Picture 1: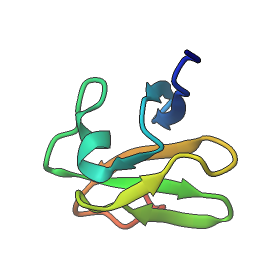
Picture 2: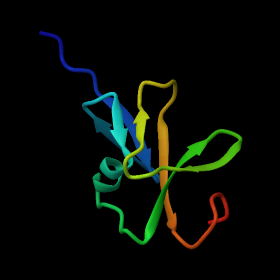
Picture 3: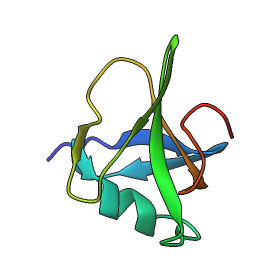
Picture 4: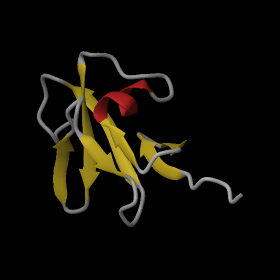
Length: 81
């Protein structure tokens, strides 16, 4: 049986592997050291400000390239942190 495909994504500068092709904002928050509730989760989008990712929002990790996530204080604006 072939090995199950792993999907990669980044949080800040750290690369992580995930067994499923999709991941929710809540699952991203729980990976690695975790992310406090006082921080918002964003996904970097080429040529655009970061896109806010909600806890229940599902991200497709099959897209070309590697998805990049970052945390920012909930009181600041996307792309200005």
